[in-house]
Length: 210
Image 1 (cartoon, rainbow, N blue to C red):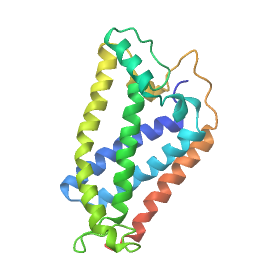
Image 2 (cartoon, rainbow, N blue to C red):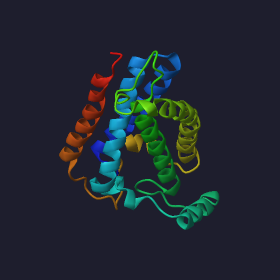
Image 3 (cartoon, rainbow, N blue to C red):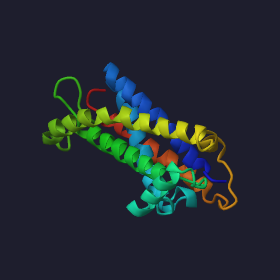
Image 4 (cartoon, helix red, strand yellow):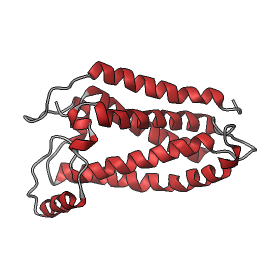
């Protein structure tokens, strides 16, 4: 199996939380925007931890590579010489890092975002002077969500049409590859996933507006 169950659950939950936070933020529904955002933050924390101690294909060290290997992959891609990879390819790794970095930053800035009128983040009371700064970056960085999601979807379409790789199906079923090791620590991963998301979402109780 290429993708273990905790990684697959993270992937789809992360996608839902990103879409939910984006749409509710645009609608001005701050209650649900906060819940989706906190869920994304908890998932971000889980993925960072799981990227170190999780299943081999989920570990950052197995797919994060340097510029040289990325260039070699791009060169081969233009000539369709690349063999399908069991996990993330070099470009997929960049997409993962970009989305994790963006949503992690949005999640953290959201904790302190506030306008002293309609909304205060759950941790704004700890550092009220940061509210304006965090709020500006929180709003500014939201504009990167659609471009990154668009690039992600374009990459999936490219892999399906030109490289004949069913990445979406693989992320649902786990996929298979002769070099992929048997998943381990699945139960620990599920417990960690639930713990991280629950802990992050519990911060909503600290929000003074609610």
